[in-house]
Image (tube, rainbow, N blue to C red; front, side, top):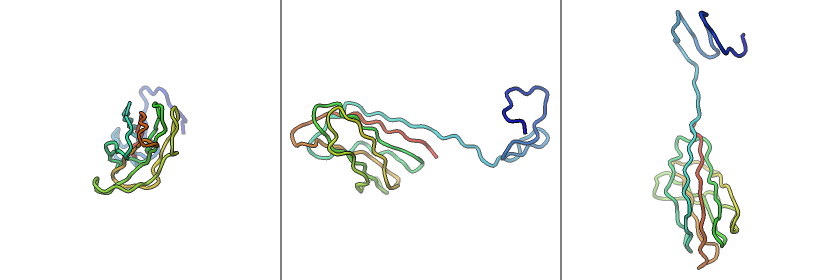
Length: 141
């Protein structure tokens, strides 16, 4: 047990936690893990009276994901996350802090898992459009 090794010259490593090294060849590894990070920003989105979805994200290979919403407009908005197994038929999974006032931020984390996930948004007051920025952040598994 050497703790952290920062420099090794002319030495031999015979084992690493979770791996086997034989005659200088790595012959088995228990696991190698590195989570990927995804960020997708959609900015200056105008709202309307009806719920409008953003394009769906394929979340089948993601472990953790969320939607960051910033209301940059002058009027409140409503938001919700919808999920789907087939990319055609969607179920309302989680609603945001509705209505989201002008200048406010919300983060929506889906409660359930399906292959596709999307954010839908609308003006909270009919005829009173606003503008939002949405950032989808995710970590791979």
